[in-house]
Image (tube, rainbow over the protein chains, first blue to last red):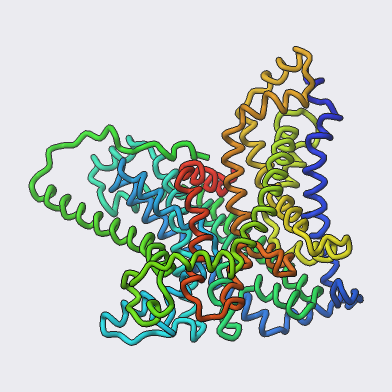
Length: 294
Length: 300
């Protein structure tokens, strides 16, 4: 009976358009972009071959080093922050709010769907110092502290960025991890309680190991997203002050479109892709090992 | 994975042993602690939005001269009209809709058809093809921007909204194909075999039988893709080379620069318009949105 379901013409009609568009928009440009890495120029002036120049430049460019370091620092801190804050929320939902948690869950989730540009501008104003101190500085003033010019130096701007992105996404990870926590059978928890485990010890020895798989998939998902951070940075600081908060994605964008260096931009994009693949692979391997041990 | 347990409640069947007074007291203390945590959470999540809204109806002098905590002295609803017309947010919203709606329709139609072909149809190489689609989720969009820019420039598509529509469709397909193929797993093949016995072609069966069966999934995937595309900045920033083509995100990003830095009310009104659009959808469809976005994250 598989004759009908194996109808080649039908398969072509159903799959063809999607495959064609996907190939044209994603696969071909990917290979094409690799080719750009060996050229100089842009689509308006034309391209000339430049061998490995872009790669040697990449290795020596201090701006690339800064951007790579910023990207990694940001990704590690935000990933840890998102997943830990999300896990704490999920524990709160499951063990303290129980049935009442649906409303809180829904409320805490909603920043996820807000446009990043809007959130970025909002946080700019929340943390602003002039012309009018925003709520955060007003709060500091109320406690008798001096206002802080958060966006005046890269260090504090970085932390505002971190706070904003954790604010945006902790509700998302809470729901993701919540789904893992409710899967833990009641009997397991109940028997652990009868054995005298409670509170932190219950969480440390029973709940945490059992939710390790879903924690790991959250980590992989989170690190993959945070390495590609772009919107938040552009909307909040636009890479500044100076280039103090410029990740690889933004540096690639500036090289390509502000300075019209397509070849160099493509090389930075390639570096970003390699970093993403390596980090995902590393996290994946670690998570595999943990799974087999426990 | 275990997304459908989202609504399941826990611990319904707990037997509660009689507690000694000390433990009961600690329990009450614990409740207070929980309440404080929830209150703090609510303030942190909700207050920024309330502040944003209140500021959007303040006049400039009210914003500059009074405390940032204060309520508006007068409610300046005109800020919204100002943002919409003088600030061009109306035009940007129209552009966004003109790019998002066709892209969404294409993604859903092509993605569902491909998911059907990859999951229900039986042929050699279908798992490999699915893997090829999956690979698309790993690639950072930066990897495809420059060649696409050249492509659109050379084909004369620059200067229209087509680059946005095509790029959104191409980048949205991997996740959609994957999610639809997963949903089709739950639909038995016999359903289609029986239908085709009655003489209907498999294409007809796809359209009239499979689409109604997966309509819930279509709504979920559609919502997920809607938020991705509507909130996108990178692609819109790359391919909108004139002010007339700006989407709402690009327009909002340039709002202060275009409009003069001193107009705070309209700026906040513009942010509000952008935020409340997505918020309204969330208000009505939040369970679907939560389910869709989280199941998109847990692939396999």
